[in-house]
Length: 219
Image 1 (tube, rainbow, N blue to C red):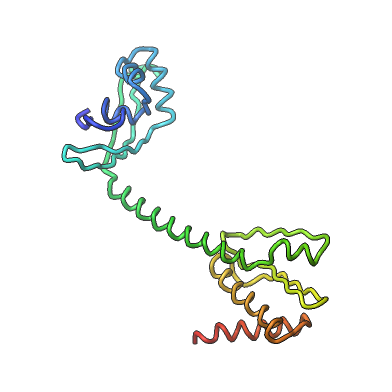
Image 2 (cartoon, helix red, strand yellow):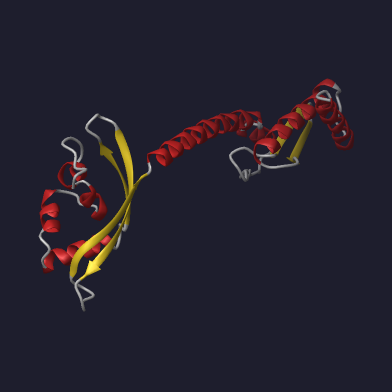
């Protein structure tokens, strides 16, 4: 109780560690907690079954906030398995770990946000539904990337009366696969639009050549 705060939420203001141990929600529950009778024993036991470990902030006198991680063990009266006589609590300062967790979470959120934006870019490279509808009276699309972005993609180009459709599976998953899929998509576009190819075999050969050419420029 020496760590009770004068300001803050109910748990810290009223009973410091104890309120956080058993997950007290209001002052009435706190009064029941400190009055260890038969009725409160049932109440506390139900709370402890759900919260043997708690992490909570403590406000120091200088205004700093530290995080405490605390385990609680229930002590029963001699010869009893139901009447609670007290508790043993072990607590330690986990502020550094919480700070590291917050930093990792921030970095993870940043990475996820970037990948989600990449997903939007990749999705916009796929043929639009109205384009497919104009070429195929009956069709359906099942596109379920394993990760946020994908190495799989579908591609379509209409040249005169001909419709060229490709269902492509690039090497890899996730970000590496998505990068290769963008290069392959560009290779298919160039093979048909720039080199005027319409034969499937010729398109695939030219696309492979363009993909290798793109990656070889990095060596």
